[in-house]
Length: 581
Image 1 (cartoon, helix red, strand yellow):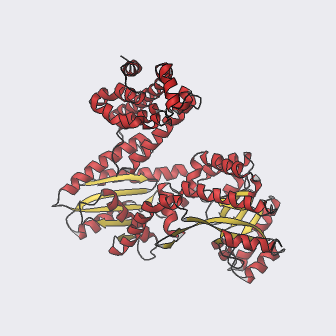
Image 2 (tube, rainbow, N blue to C red):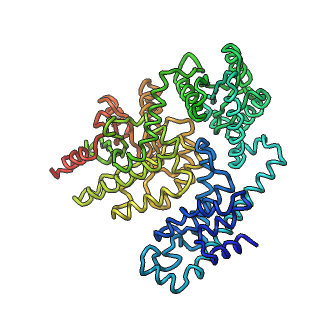
Image 3 (cartoon, rainbow, N blue to C red):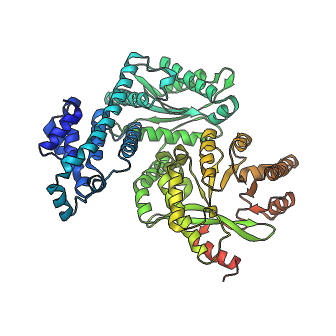
């Protein structure tokens, strides 16, 4: 029998759709069918409430059974599983013409007694559910077949080839193997074990100067060399891009230091291009600790080493524990911070020098915890960017910004646009554009009043692709931190920005010499010839204001005029500025 035939037969035998789908796949995936029925019962919860179709949630369970999404410590596996679940839902939605709830599929709300009676009397479930079951099973068969085909190919290939480094399936497979090897190493308590995490200092510059293809060659060079340096007591993993992790057994600290020195020597250059590695080392003391926590300690040491001027390697120290606790606090409290509105929108005014008038504001996020107080952006932003929660926070701030614009519009103030930051995470897909449009439509505001800021250091291709979509939708696009990266002019050439925001450090560097001030003057002139708006960030002194005014940069933002402030305070300032108070 085919999977669909099994599922239809199980439904005829009285099992609900989620049980039928799980039952159709259970035995071939190594599960006792009765146990699968028991487990899948909970997947019918959404169906019984009239919510999302039980076929969908059951299919997620089948994907987990087939592809092995079971390790809560394995972030790579979790991310891959989430990606596959998203792919499934998108395909289901497409093939069902958008119908993803039981109410849509059956035409009645199964959670309502009267509707349920109609469903039973007319036998709607046996008539209509097989369509959804058929779609789900078809997608599942495609995804499982694709996964197994790829695994078979990898079994026949040398899975260490460069092209496989970026393969999602290969990376997940390697992560599993790596975790098993490290676990076995840690179980041998007679061996000293160290986690060594390293990356390449200023790897982005290498990509910008020599091209991404050359950057890929550098990574493959490191990857291949690590294969020769590792053995049955030493394992490595390419975590992402230029970030690598080596877990090694060692006899003495001298041996460990010698190994790190060997890594430095082996990777000191590639094709005459000098490379400098940054190392973070964690010496394992508590073997009951989760492997992820051990990795985190090595990562903390590496990040601290990046800030050091006299060394490129640091061993994890107890003082780093505070950073670990901060990360744990943030990850445990970030969801509640959204739900309880602990995240607050602050606004920093933008001024016209010539008019001495507010011409807009930038929306920024601040986290005010009821017990801990202010959690500063430099503490939580890097962490939520890394784990992806930045999307949720951005969505929250965008909605707040749209609501504030509506508040101003109701009082006749329609000349104070609010700019919001679009994080790197959003550039991977178009979901954020739909979220922005929803906020604008819900609040009934003019699209021109919600401006978007993208940092120029994000990947050029992603910027270009998304910026074009943003422009097609009629948004005003600001290049944030212009001058902070190494490809500003290239990004400017390829991407349809409306406004350049001059980075504070760029401003400070340019104003430190006559040559720098001349460069700044020409940047302003270039922006005018390209018909681009220009705004200088980080303006803090009267001298800076005078120079910017002299060379024709009229719009500024910085502490000289105002610091970021709660939106209520900015609102009062804006009312005064507009003569409405």
